[in-house]
Length: 167
Image 1 (cartoon, rainbow, N blue to C red):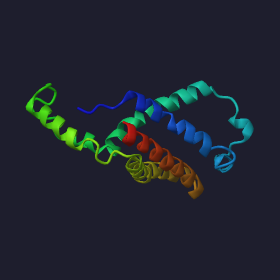
Image 2: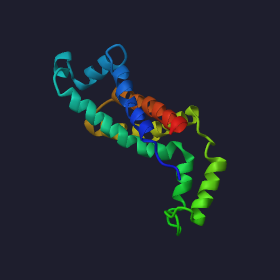
Image 3: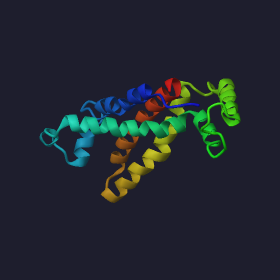
Image 4: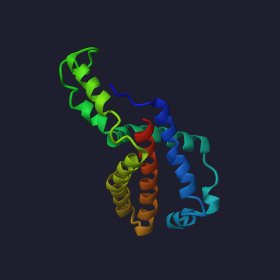
């Protein structure tokens, strides 16, 4: 039975930190992001960076779980059989069937490129609406949505690629 790889999850959970460092840097979108939010370089100083980065890593780690299901088709296959008798019994007929199926089909669509496609779809169809809805009620404009949605699309593409290829 397929299990998420904790090392891959931990590596993947670093991606939002790395992407954020680049995306929100003053040489990319950081200056515009700060202006839109009314931040100044002085107001950005301070704060407990260890807590901020630690919580970001933890939340990003949580994000890797649904990405496993979205990017690796074989996880969805297994979920169909969860209610069957013997699903959790080693050597049962259903476990043997799943094992045989995965032995034959476990590597289909397991590429970085395929994971990026699913990451793109998650970013476009999940993250963008969430950012957009928040922006509507926060009275934010298009640039705000474009910066944040763009960040999440790129980030989820890289995360999806890593998970699909190595997970």
